[in-house]
Length: 302
Image (cartoon, rainbow, N blue to C red; front, side):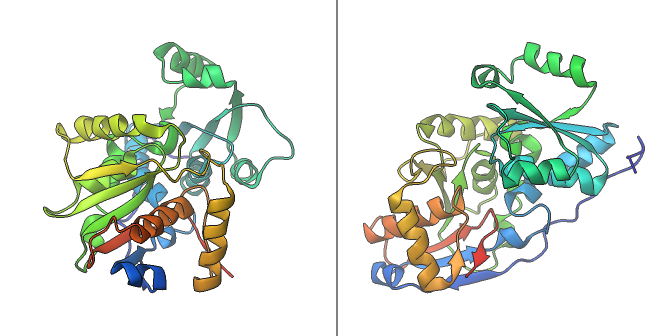
């Protein structure tokens, strides 16, 4: 069933999710406490920051009378997967503009998306870099008709506002909240929602991602007309770039699984935790620091 123009999509505010302390000898030697905020358990179809980013956008799309969502991403994009799931759940048609050429058989992400009814459109990397140009957007409207456009990664002002709701859900004392950074919206929102005296630290999953600082600042400016000074980004733990991994990252993932029985999602979550552990080893956090790490994508159990 498709949405009527007067029909609303209402996702409830984020439900309570576990906030659990991770006990590890490496952290204890550094005098650091680490709490995992299991946002991957927020919603069965829209885990982690995808729920937060899409919540207000889906409501806005329905209010404007749209029945189609169009968005962008790479072949392993969790955002593509989430938008496809949201479309199937709430009655939107969905179109995914995918960077690069089609490769068959489809990987798990794109197979899931098509299984949810998403139409995939592949464009070359040069054209993808120009995806936000007005001419490129208009060409898509001529081809597919009207749609509600979600940016790559879902990071816009409504997404930032959704992510800004996260810090208020942390009901224990903490000093630093950490998150992976791909398109900047999650970090922009978390930092905007922090109380004074706390800070946010993002870990870029992109090689050459120093432009992300400008992106986070722009998202805060567009959303709140100001840029907070309580956040920073570390660029040293991308493991080769987006959707890439190297021997050091794999060794961390294997060791973490051995110690804690958790198989980390490697595109985002593992890179953040690898960064936290390494910085703790190097003494970059003062003894006594309490860190909250936001688990933004599903993790498994051994």
